[in-house]
Length: 115
Length: 114
Picture (tube, rainbow over the protein chains, first blue to last red):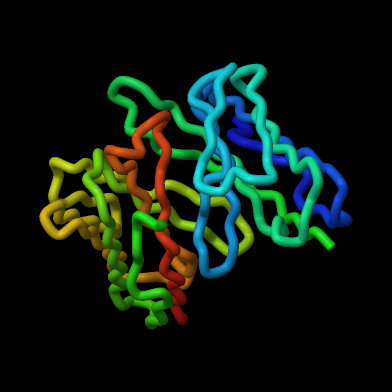
């Protein structure tokens, strides 16, 4: 079982360009999340999705958009990248529901540098 | 603002010693989880303690939870060099509990020297 995969592993992007970070899970989890991790700030939630077809804003959603067309995929799009979006991005999923504690499973991350 | 605050920010010990990391949070919770992150990797779930539990063990890990003080501690006994990693607490605050969202602390960076 692959768990969660993310692509690309790393990317250098020119400011103003758009980019989509891909995330796929094979655990049939209903909930998925995108975080960014910056030194000294820990993990901050960007967007989340409780189930296919629904999304919600996290702590730092500005400049990012997501979609959840199906259970497995949760892409994160930067429409017009800025240098402050330089970060490591982690996708996670969890099985949330009655009796499920919401343990999250993380992908390996995408290291993005915006110049 | 961060729900979880961790202490210390960094901890350096010798192999065989015990490591204790603390986490404080602000609002009522359903459960508190601890995660580990090796350098350059994603987070891995270690242990979960529910709000009605006070202590939980898993191998060399011992977690305590004091809901009256809104704090938790993670103890790693007989540490090994392979335990070197960053450790994060995460809470699903009751007021934030939509879709299992978690709020992570800033982490404790543990270094275990051989």
